[in-house]
Image 1 (cartoon, rainbow, N blue to C red):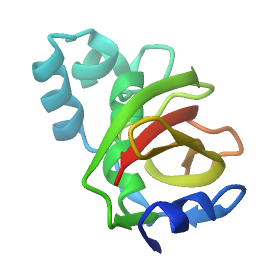
Image 2: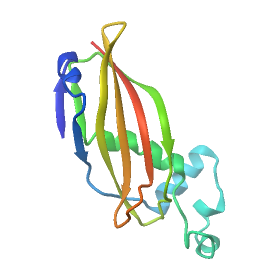
Image 3: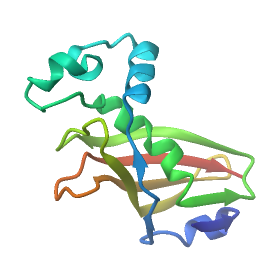
Length: 151
């Protein structure tokens, strides 16, 4: 894990590879809980019997669940202190090249693309994230996320 404190150390992160998180297994319970939270109960996510004969051979995680897991996984890569507030400013690009099957293990790789000063005594940080699937050459998700941190 990389730890930084304050705006100057955040600015120095530009171009830095943050490495990889630990692997995290995707369970049917997690998928079902996400389905309940989002009212997305499509059978490819929540019906193991029907999904077994479907295109993926079993249930898969929602793409947006995979994307949402970037938040807690990112917390394993970077700890930021010395700021009064951090906000998720958005996403520039998101793709889901490969489904995450229930039982797969995923991890996050991160790289700081840029860090620039913004109005209000803050910095805007763009990061490239890749959600990898254990044993797969194809990632589950690639995304460029943008965060703002204010001193």
